[in-house]
Image (cartoon, rainbow, N blue to C red; front, side, top):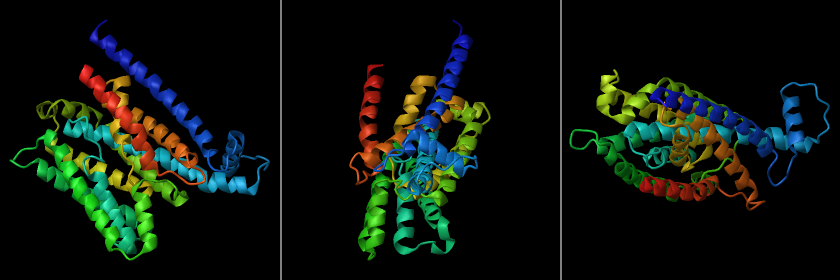
Length: 349
């Protein structure tokens, strides 16, 4: 088998897997909408959603079922899918930009910076004049400042060293987490403190229809930019010299990529809180299945990340019903053994 035949085989396998994951995501979304402290059958979910979309269906469901499905569960599942897709895509992008398989928005301090900005907005009304986008705007500023600080530390000595980025991200992340905790300590608002603490653990419990467009826009922005930049990601993942030889300035491209990552992560964090491991683990799984070409890695990571978070959120709703398990705890419990398995396999190779 020639290299060309092998490449075409990998692309076909990637296309088949992507279609299968998309179908699984649609089916999972319908089932997940019905899962919760009050179960609703998939048939009722489909009929309620169809009626809300304008289909001429007879109302054989109760008003409470309609409220649960359309006002609470559907926006929650959609937002979970959007956030999971954003986290997975940004994880794949960051790992290529810094050429480090352990890089993700959580470990590089981006999520911690977004958390600090959002906490400042929630507790002290920073940017309150902006209305509904105050938290997102504050989260973006915090994320951008965090990654600028991380990149500055990583460039100590006059040149950028990708391997140094992880250590800088961990240090900045710890510092920003401490700052966020101090903001909670300094606040006199009990309601705000509870909201921030629960939000820091990651949750989609407050998901409503006004939050869905934020997640959708973040997915569109990430998918469009990262797909258009797929060849550049392929090049810079090899080396800066390769990127230069193919006409890409690595410094400018990293800066542009980081800005897009900060923007979409800030949007995701502002509506879901801190959710770790999705951006770290999902790209590794995808690369093992479809290879390293970002033209297929990016969309496949998006769908698999969405699928993972939809089911993780469904499990969080029922694991300790009627209490809800914070989503960030569950993703950590799922992601840790997966990460250990990936490390073991890499060591064996």
